[in-house]
Image (cartoon, rainbow, N blue to C red):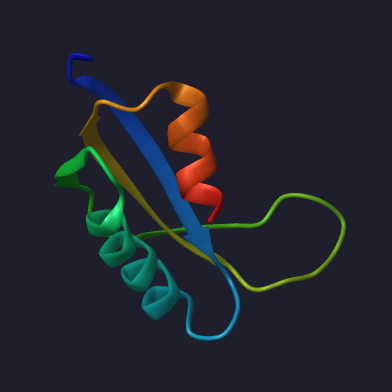
Length: 79
């Protein structure tokens, strides 16, 4: 049986109520198989990079313990 491994997931949005988007993504982490969300940062703002003018981002980081491989976790997150 695979052991629990830590992973950190960065989340961010700058469109369509970004804070709600990030909160929804954090809530979605609870549905990941063989993965437990154990810590979540506060929401924080960051300025976009690059020459295109766009709104600031709302970000958060989640710390999880998972029995998925890195590739399996990435695939689950993309779904």
